[in-house]
Length: 419
Image (cartoon, rainbow, N blue to C red; front, side, top):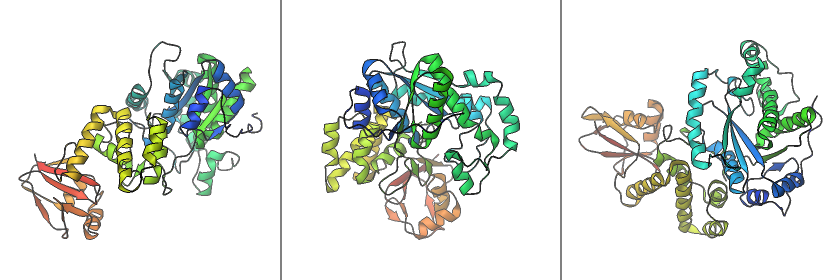
């Protein structure tokens, strides 16, 4: 049985290794299982570290980006990152922070999702055969061979483990009276097993994760030590929330996806451009490679000048994730739309095959409303504008003989044009 939780060491004020200095300066460190031991190891040799990602969607989202940046920082400091894809654990589902059980995915969908997620790693990490070259690994390589996955998938969903109060990952479900299946209960066992396998197969000594993964990381450290006598380490990044307390990476329309197939480049850029003034410096440190002295200058800007820092943030994050050309195009679109009063390029577009379209249908078609009721409420609240003019009648129709600009509030714009 695993023993008591590991002692958490406070973040040291001075580190010997480039790795922990970089992570600390950029605001990435929340908890370390053994700061002194990891610092000494990173100062004398190349450390192999990993983070795991289940393939539950064809793209990661902004909420995952902080952990991917940890792998980037690891490589920037001269160490070797492993991006672990959860081809095996995706078949079960991580219960951490979830209210309900995940939908079962087929192996074909999981494989397709892994291919989509790989695009982000290709942009942020360098994959090669060097000592610090990144590696993509799929935990299905060993988990499926255990002969355990099929048993869990077939039998596990029929058992709940609501009485297992000792695990942090079940508390949310129990507090909200949501059942937790035996299938999901086993997730933490398999994640711990992943760390052991990576230590044996790839010499991995460090696991990264968000703060909600602390318990799973500790389990893996203890399992690896007890079964194989290997000393491994864990580091978590803070749970990211915006200055107003909202969870990072969510918008009124859902997740902010990292892949352009799931979210247009302009919308991705605009998400960062709309950052709260109080978050600009922190987000520049975590999500970009902008030098720290330049970040200090940018976050000190006052009044309307802070908008220049927000534009830098939007450009740099978009360039990292979508490419520099996408960032420049998005900025040009924003300037044309907001400053010049034009339509701009790369805005969400709705092509209409008829001479007219109702304003309600147009708002839904552009994704500004999810239902007729929501569209009507937007109009009633004065939030809908056509070519800059407020729309007051929810029965109004839009003539589509030429391109028109439909807006939702001050920051969301779309183009309606003839097909």
